[in-house]
Length: 469
Image 1: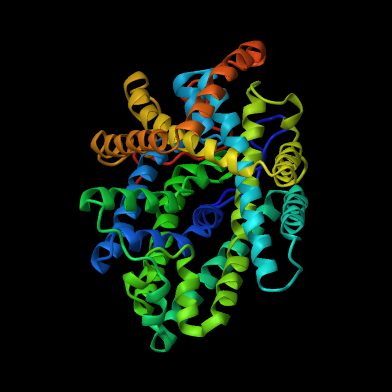
Image 2 (image 1 turned 60 degrees about the horizontal axis):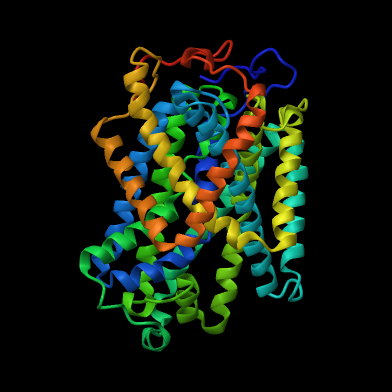
């Protein structure tokens, strides 16, 4: 049952509790599905030319993501506070871990806003709507426009997220339908002639693990709802439901796209394609196929821009509210929008676009993305032992085995990230080293660490213990 909207807490600088399950689903879909699903199938086909394994690895990736959502749902309902994994890191491991996770998450999410907007700008130019060379300017306009929209209030962000996510799903399903309707027009031989052939040198197990890693990265983004925990009107139920049902929706879309691609072309024709969707569309419609794919990108990416801006602002707001961020970033307007945090997030994204530093920022951020999940999964174990009697409306099913599995996977991904990109991993380590003295200088402003029960908000209606999804 939905509750009447009211402010969280008693301060004027407080968020509004006006979001529902539909927003949670929309932010999961909007934040998870990006351009990766249009590109990654070409990499997977190179590693797994068997159609059965090609499709199967997407099922495995979806199951892994569901296990991750299972673990984070416990933390999200136990600590229902907006701000994402920063909240878990600070509560479980202390102020310094929270400081590091919060700031890195904020910076990297702002960089994601910039990258998504730039890809959107490139697609607008590719279809001839604007002249070449204007990609960065288009991206800046996109960031500014969404920032101005979201400043109007939480309800506007909610509406924008639901509309753009619905548009994204419709565009991708239209592509799927086109594949099935026009598969007979494909010229597989011509496409295969220009595609790279699958590598026979990679051992089967290693090929599957590399493919699984790429797929799991493509599923990343499902944790979106935990960034808005205290703004959901029933977080005990809506956090797990948003992530589980949202992920199931994403998995259905991903499987449909991959099956549709195979309907048009064999894996040998997809293998090595840098944009698998374009290879498929070109096989069906010739040179005009790329325009179709670019149109899908243009329709799909606004939801990710909207979601990432909303998420970035909640991280900065939460870090600042706890005395570990910018004192002025706690201002919330009458519409419930953390206006200063939103503007700061937009400014940082625009700065990345203007200075051309995106590549290095995201390469370093990839290390921290995996590290954040590692800390969160470890926090489930730590808090089960340290606070066994804490309120847990949702308890991770299959724990400790299910949580242990995704924790082991995160550690493996972290190790592979270090091995694959040693230079940027060293940069990430340097950030950790430099961040500690910065934290020590400002730690006197940090608010006391609350108990788990104090995260409960006034007038919230808690779900029964061990609420089922």
